[in-house]
Length: 375
Image (tube, rainbow, N blue to C red):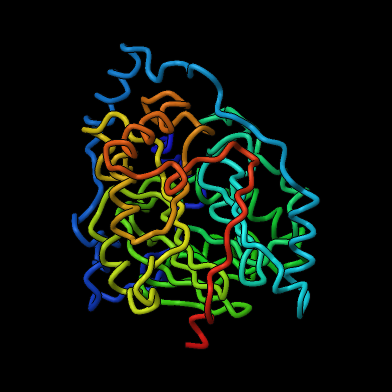
């Protein structure tokens, strides 16, 4: 489970004093980081036990009606797009931004001259001890195998849970690029990566930004928590990412409960929208939401994701964080059905909030006008 013996673990973070604590900022406290609109996502052990016993008695999660769909990846076109991304002149102008769902919260974004991966996990299990068979096992292989990826310029990490920060995957990406891939992480996470040999790492606090290759990356608040072991709960920060490239403005939520942070993010960047949508694309989690009494503070359900789509001012959204690991009580294939019902109730067309098959690429229209840096 994601609460995974909230990990037995080895790499329980280095001293909290080294993690950028600044008690002048409201989300920094002496006990760890906190959320903006609820102090902490903190369920007592009794609630965890109650949930697991209830799921065991009721045989949850139920088996899926059908396994989540899989599509053969468009590897040649993605590689050709990469070559064009790195060119100049007419070839570069002809590049179409794209998003490819690799599985869970892992997606490949091609835009702004860069290949960007979100929360990459290519391992068989989301676990501190995968060789012992502990932790959720993949129901589907990654939509693109790690060796088949185009060269990755930037990796975005939302928080340190095992299904979002998979060290084996990060080490593989770093080795593959000869240390050239940039890893952008929330406060406190850099120490874990550098302990494992990654050197090209930049960590940010909420609302801080980093430019790379002409693209602007902002860490933004969401509602969640962090831990990789006993005793390190909330010692590192969590967050979503707002990314502004010349051809695509996009958002990645990572893991989050429904929160006013979405509306705050829209207001923060409203001046970039010029009266239109703030984001051309938002990647929003739609899975791991049952039972609500236990999960609502930390994981949105699809109806809440639809509201987040509206709060963010997104032109279109992609539902992620489903169909790969059995983390909670809904079936692997339930989130898209619940999303369809929520879309219908809200009067939102399927094209505006869609899901992809694992491995599928959606080619997107390039944003018109100048890059944010040029405005």
